[in-house]
Length: 156
Image (cartoon, rainbow, N blue to C red; front, side, top):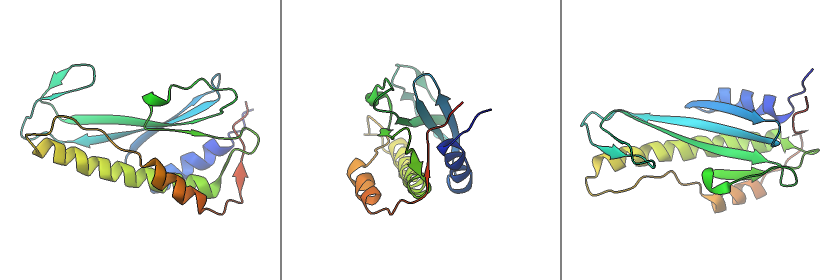
C-alpha cells in the first residue's frame, strides 16, 4: 500500500487554490515530483508564433511549464528544464504551510505569465515570451513562513 505523504496535501491544495489546468507527476525512481501547468490563450488575430523547437503556428496557444520538487541527495535534475527546482528533505518532506504558500505563489506566477503571454501576442515588436519565477521573492516569502505540519516524501 502506498503512503503519499506530501503528494496528498499538494494535490488537495492545487485542486482548491490553483485555477489553471495542472498535472502532478511522481517520478519514484528519481525521487522527484513534477507539477506541470497549462496556460491557454486564444490567438484570435492568427499571429504566427514559433515555439522553442522551431514549430510555427497561428493556432491558439497552449503554454506548458513545470516546477520540480527533488531530493538533492538522490535525484538527478536538469534545473534549466524547469521554471523552478525546489529541494526537499526526504524524512522531513514539505510542510502544509509551505505547500499552501507554494500553490499561492505558483498561481500568482501563472496569472502574471498569462497576462504577459497576452501582452506578447498584442505586441508586434515582441520576439520572445517566457514565464518568470521570481526566486528572490519566493525565497523571501518562504523565509517568513512558520512551518509546523510536515509531510514526508511519499513511500510505496
